Length: 221
Ligand code: MG
Image (cartoon, rainbow, N blue to C red; front, side):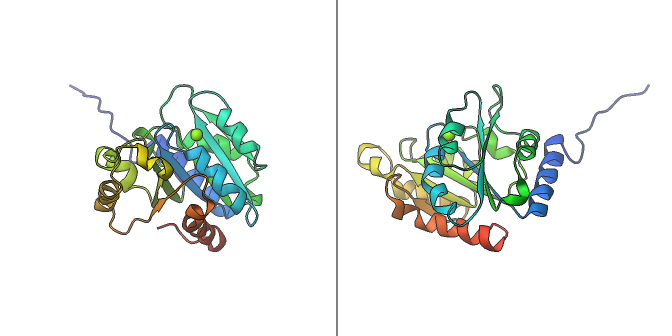
């Protein structure tokens, strides 16, 4: 009797596409940052805060992931940087293949820094390598301080974490120390930014970190 066996291949389709994306980005000298976090945590607003500062020095572009609409891409386009909207048509995360098609629409050789804003979701996107060099996780104080404990993979795989909407802290049941302890339990050295969206000074350390990586093409760690 012959039994057919289907094994998971050593490299899945997503991993293959991610490796291809990384090779394309490396060849063009583009630093790519995957921005992840739940719906409404402030990913697009954060990009609106940091891109005008970074685009004075660097050539910046954005791949904007969403399930539907071009709303976020329109917000980014108004900053005057190239943007491609990636629509997943219902899927809860970006895939490396979709990112590959997005990269195809950009002039990579002319770029220094690429942000890939993932679909608003604290769960699935963290499981998919897109070929990025670094990950930025965003957590807003309106979401609750238990999220690093409930969605550890998002925070564990992030190189840096932004806690956003700090100005709303007095109105939220959010223990900053508890949230930060949860993040640091997953990575004791992980930098955490506490950001107020309309306070540019709160974004300084994050901008400096991104600037160093874009300028020196230092691998993100
Ligand atoms: Mg968004």
